[in-house]
Length: 224
Image (cartoon, rainbow, N blue to C red):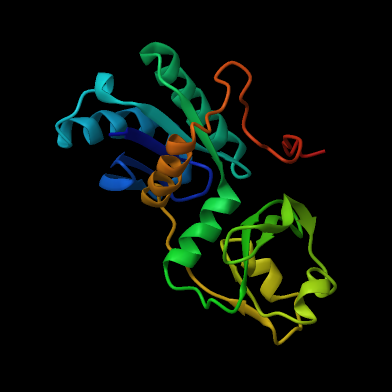
């Protein structure tokens, strides 16, 4: 048995999930990105209480490690590491873009298409990657400035499904008929499935040295 607390606050829609052997028991959501930090600990307490479990029952904590919101990533990682330290349990980290691709596939994405998650970054930049249906990365997760030639090497022969809040920028740039923008629902229940796979492989991340995958340097607008 693996009882895992799964935390995702990397994007505007945050969620947490208590999963048992990869099966979601309870999921809680928060759509107010400015409130993720205040919401998280209260939501975890409610999640455990409603599920009839104690924090001491947890076998691991899983977290989306980025890319995504800088504040959201810090909040999730610090919370997850704190629980793991206190309880003496392992930490599991999953890339946000990989999780998005997995969610799209599980929601019935066309099996003949590649998977292109996108998270909005500043200006014409997005955090993105490109995956096969088996979640093998053809383009590794990173930051990309979008232009008409983005993904052209793959669009020459394959249709690609793009999803996530970064697609609003891409829709105004791409001219390829092989580009398909779809809506997906991503929540920590999907993280519960992936974290259980990592649990079985004992694929844990180092609690001391693990950090969010910011991908880009932190940016603050100074007004100058």
